[in-house]
Length: 388
Image (cartoon, rainbow, N blue to C red):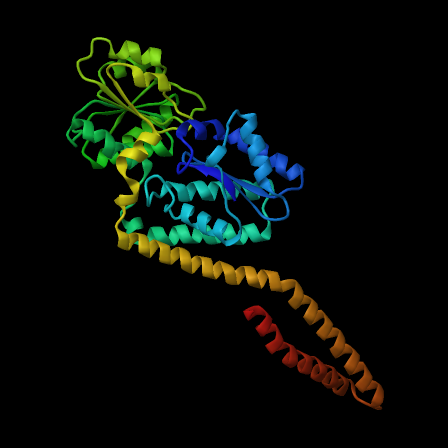
């Protein structure tokens, strides 16, 4: 594995490497055309490449970053072998996220794996590894307290935003931009905290109506945005666009004459709000780097919950190791059994040549005896090879 994540790369770096759906498909198609195997995991927190085989993707990654004007320096992380597998398992389990225990990343890993398989750029070994990682993530969700009390970037953003209002959003005017997974997470968290004045804005009116109705919010078209912002106390932006959809100039007009600041949470990578808006009087702008700094994710999960999750990861890694050893032994075992079948056939033919006037039933018994003897000799050998 080679890549960057929120641990060492700022949101400004991550947004330059973020992939849209079309870009991901094009890159995977390029790998297939080149006869290479790779999986690309692009989320708000990370952009990582996983591969199996002789190709080394570190050079590819550096060239890709350079083409986008990114200087990686110390931000690039490379892990090989078991360390790469353990990292992937931790990612899928939500243990390597900005908000420890968040569940959204499991779906992101699954979609990245599905896309790579659909493009024909995974190997059998990669199938084993990613299937086991997804299993680890599901087990952490269902078997540990991290799963019983799920967290997400969206819920953390609502929690941080509420601090500006003494911890209670209540009937404050809230505007949410977007209708994807992150926006739905914001709506869910607002609903659970008792927010009563929430407006969802999206370019797709039907999608907005359906989503808003599910969480007690009202839905609005994009043409209503400026009017809604004028009276808003809190703005969540999570559209998934590849460029800013809220400009600093637009916000300048919104805050003119206001007595209360507009708290703005940008949950997108690439960022959906122009960073220059941070300097505006009357705007409190937070992005994912700010969220990581303010919500203290490492302290959010109890030690016992983390230990339970790590135990699950250890168990799934051990199971994966057994599977990969069996996969590595399979060609040798197949060759051993092919040789055994040849020996049985040769020895049965020799015995039959020494015997005259056998019935067909007797000849079959001789052949079966040779096969059984060879199988009984090979069975402990095969078992030993699998165990080793």
